[in-house]
Length: 398
Ligand SMILES: [Zn+2]
Image 1 (spheres, rainbow, N blue to C red):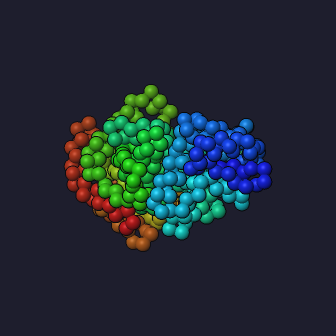
Image 2: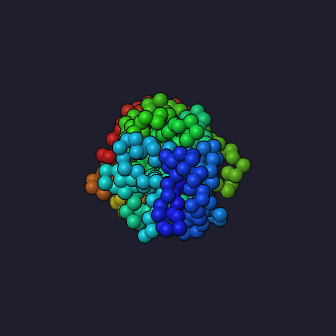
Image 3: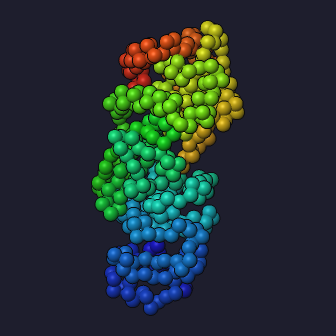
C-alpha cells in the first residue's frame, strides 16, 4: 500500500514523493496500517514503486499486494483524478472495516473501485461485495486482463470470472479488466452464454485517455454473433448427448423421464435472449425446462401466471436451474432472462401476455422425425425470427 500512519497518527503518502524524501522517511518509522493498526515496513524500490508492506497479512485485505496490484491501483487512482473525479487512494472506511483501492463518488454514488489481480476464493469476494452494498457503496470490480481467456470471441466464464459481470452505469452486463503493465483497459460486453462456462462476447481495448463513461457506454448488439451462436448451441446439445457423463446428466435424465429425445426439442428452445448471464445453467437447458412445463402439449387457451413460473424456477427446479454468483446481482433481477424468453414466445405466437398472465395460443410440439426434419426446421425458424431476436437485445428495457 501507498499510505500508512506514523507514530503520531499522521497519514503518510508515498504518492508523488521523490526517492530522496522517501529515503528520508525511512528514519521516521515505525509506520502502521491505517486499517488494522499493525506495523508495516517501508519498502523502497520494487521497480520504482515504493510502498508499505505488512509483516503478516492484513486482516482487512488478506490477499496481500503484488507489484502488479500496486501498479494497477496507482494507475486507477491517476486515471480517475485525470478525469477530474475526486479519487481517494486506500481510504479506510472504519464503519465497515474495508479499505477499497480507490474510493470515489460517481454521480453522487459512493463507489469502491477494487482492482483484483489474483484469483481469490469467491466467498471472500462475496463478503466484501455484500458489505459494500449493505452500506450503500457500489463496488466496481476491475480484474487483471491476464485472468481472461478469449478465443474466437468466446470468453471462458469460470465462477471467478463470471462473478465480475456487472451492470454499474450500464443496462447490460459487462466485465472490465485492466492491464496495468501495458496501461490498457479491456471491456467485455454483449455477453451471451452458450453453456455454463462459455459465452460469446465483444472484447474492446481502451487507452488510458478514455473516461469511465467511454469505457462502458454505447454497446451495439453484434449481429454477426447470430449464426455462430445458433450453431454453437446446437453443437452444445449434440456434445451433451454423446458426452461420457451423459448418464449422470440431470438435464438428459429430465428429458428421459418425460420421454423426450433431446433432438426432438423444437427450435424455440435454445434461443439467444438478453441477460442470460444471470443464469449458470446452460440456456438451452433452462429454456427446455420452461417449455416442457408450460407449453408442451398444453391446450390452447390454458393460462398460467408469472407467479407459477417463479414457483417452478425457485422451488420445483431449484436443483436444476442455478444462478451465477454476480458482484452486483440485486433482488429479483433473476427473473429477467425468463421474462425475456416468455416475451420471445409471445412473438412466435405460442403465448399471449395479459398483464402477468400468459395464455397458450399455440401449444409446443416436439419435432417429428428429427433426423430428417430438425435441420430444415431450425434453419427456417432462425431465418424467420432473426429480426425479433436481434431487436430484443436492443430493447432490453421494454
Ligand atoms: Zn492492515
